[in-house]
Each structure stands twice: as C-alpha cells, then as structure tokens.
Amino acid sequence: MTTNVAPAGGQHKTDVVIIGAGPIALFAVFELGLLDLKAHLVDILDRAGGQCAELYPEKPIYDIPGIVEVTGQGLTDRLMDQIKPFGPTFHFSQMAESLEKAGDGWRVTTDAGTQIEARVVVIAAGGGSFTPKKPPIPGIEAYENESVFYAVRKMDRFRDKVVVIAGGGDSALDWTLNLQPIAKKLLLVHHRDGFRASPDSVNKMRALVADRKMEFHIASIKALHGANQKLEGLTLSNKERGDYRVDAEMLLPFFGLTMKLGPVANFGIGLHENLIPVDTEKFETSTKSIFAIGDINTYPGKLKLILSGFHEGALMAQQAFRYCRPDEKLRFQYTTSSSSLQKKLGVA
Image (cartoon, rainbow, N blue to C red):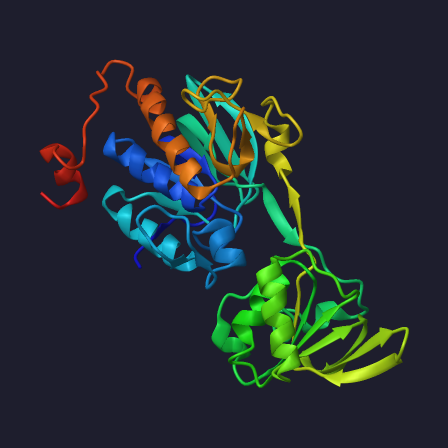
C-alpha cells in the first residue's frame, strides 16, 4: 500500500492537520478530500490504524455499517484505499508536542521537530496515547518483543508455540479463544476464578478446559525463565500449590492499558475529565477552528463507536471548509450523483 510518509523534521503547510491516524482520522481525510481540503496526519505509532491496528488487528469488528465482519487491520486497509485519491501526508512515530497560533491558523510541532502550519486542527487521538500495564515481574523487559507481547499483531507468530495468556478481561479471553486452535499448547493464568469478560467467552473457555484442550491456572506469575530473550518457562504461585513451574514459549499479559492525553492536555483547550467537550453541530472545541472527533471528545449522548466518529468527521469537514475557503461557497453534493466528486475519486 503506497503511503506518503514524510521524514521527521522540516516545515509543512496544509489545510488541515489531524492529530491521530486511526479509523476516525482516516475517514475525516476522505470527507475533507471531497471538499478539496488537504490533510497531514501525526501519529505516535509507526503506521496508520490507531488502536484498531495496534490492539486488535486480527480481531473481528461487527458493527461497521454494511460490513458484516471486518478485522481492525482490514478496516484500516479499506480506509487507506478509500483516501488514496486525496494523497494525505503522514508523520508517523511522532507526538504532537505543542500547538500555537500562526497567522490566521495554527502551528503544530512534534517531538521530532516537525512543524506543520494549517488553518484547521482536528484532534482525533482516540483516548490519547496508550501504553500497556505491565505485570510486576522481574526482568520482563528482557523478553519483550521476542517472547512477551502486549498485543497480537500477527496470529501466526504464535502458531505451534506453548502460549501463556495472563489476565481476566475481554482481551485475555478473546485471544485465548482465537489462539487456542493454532497454539501447540495454551494456558490461561488469572489470579481468581472470576472474569471481567463476556459470559459467552468465559463459558467457551471453560468448555475447552473441560475437554482438556487448554489449561486454566488460578495463580499469579512470579518469575520468567529462559535465555537470550527466548522464554522457556514460568514460575506460577497459588495458595494450594505454592510455587510451581510450567513450560512457556510465549507470554501475552493483558492487564489493561494506561491512557494519557499527553501534550494535548496542554494545548489550552477546555477539558472535562480528560475529554474534550465539543458542540454537536460542528464538533468544534471551545477554541475556534480546533475540532475534536472520535473517542477523545465528549457531548451529551456521546457513544464511543467508530460509526459515531465517522458522522462527527463528516460534520467537522463542512465547517473546516468554511475556515479554509472563506471566499468560496460550500456546495453539498452526493457522491452517487456528483460527477465532480466521482472525478475526484477516480470513478467517473
């Protein structure tokens, strides 16, 4: 997939700068592009897709209108295909560090020294920057990205391996069910015989345990064993057995995420409980020409759904046009009937 990725540093000018590159941000590029507005996107990750691509690239999503089932990565790929005609520029592996006025617009500066001037700023950073909560196991860092992973990006990495999943939430149970068929052996470890996950998932897991297709250990992980980043086993501990060892080649700890707004919190935009209040006409913040769409915003009746974020991006684009093209008349058109829009999309 061809993507216009700019090197770190340098100065850029565009119509709209979008902070974030998840599904909501990508669809905003589409809506802006229909209005001939160019966009640059800044994301702390090294690729597009946001949490969809980072946390559940191979996990099915079922509530995208018109698509019965799609994975997080599949949705990202489709959105990237959809915005190809508009040639957005991406600034990956960078965090938007500061925001300041520049003429009648704004200047966003990243932690890599990149400066982007734009008439409009759109914050589509999901819940902010996110980091996994790591278990307090001595020396776990030595195994990370080789034997210890906090997200599943490619299921095939775990094929024919002895996999241990730690945790009791939806992510732990979902990946238990997804990886059990391909793992050589799978063990689920949780400190109690109770879960914060879908009852259906818990029942399916218990059925697999009853059929001896996997193991469930009510225990905590005390130590990791192995050399050269290669995990060989774990020490588990519980009241009945004390400390005991199990084989393990891969460990997936799912203890949740720590979400932080990061530098966005210092942009001078009104916040409410770490979210950005917006109106429901334009999804504009308390500061003119700065918008917030997706999970990072809040308003009465807000639903944290991808489809809601798509709607927010469409209305945001209408007002963004008025700021970027104040001397032009905004004409509302349908892609199904407008030959000019179809020409932009390359389908005329």
